[in-house]
Length: 306
Image 1 (cartoon, rainbow, N blue to C red):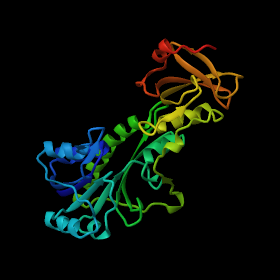
Image 2 (image 1 turned 60 degrees about the vertical axis):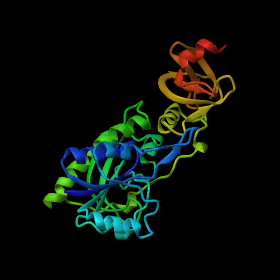
Image 3 (image 1 turned 90 degrees about the vertical axis):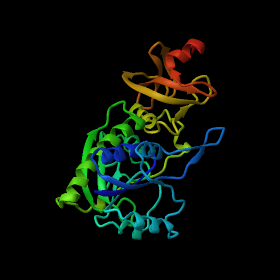
């Protein structure tokens, strides 16, 4: 099938790679413009662009999608299908409706739940035990098109958003492969989303980082795991300085200490009392100006007196 692919981050690479491996004709790849990175402000290629160039694919990086130039480009490429995966730009209806088979999107949630920018993070933040991917037709409204195919997966007890993103990228590629075959064969069976069940996954912000230790151990665990790799959960209960927390474990142990009190600190990590009386163990952290490390390594140079 002749496909125009649109995507930008690592999540999208798995889908593009699968389309290439399945033998489809990728007539072009749209991705976000190169952006300055780090202190040197050297222009960095998107992961999708990096992969596309290794495959000899034509890459296009339009600045705007509504000035007519993008539409002209789509017309010249003559795709039968447009596939979008975390592109990061809103497409006008004239582009969505151009291909003979329409435009489809690889979305990392079980729609209609978690429409929006950060579905993987919010599934963990809200304590969901399962999530998945949806392949849907793109519509004018955000993530509201008919669903063609879904795949479900359990969320691991200690799985963070970065780890889950990597798994869902692979699952999404599998679902996409099956969907493209069904569309080509005319056997796809799309179904409308139940609007009464829709929820929205808003963008993350640094205001979400500070840990409130009066919450339950499980709620805080979800916060830590859901905010990886950005903006990360933070706390200042260790030596009074703000630290990023990268990994925690619910010990199941009970304490009558006040919420936010360090109860134990040693080779296993730093145990802190939570609002429900349970202990949460900090396993990996990063102090201001320091490197990411295990809590036990941190304690070697910064012992805590209980």
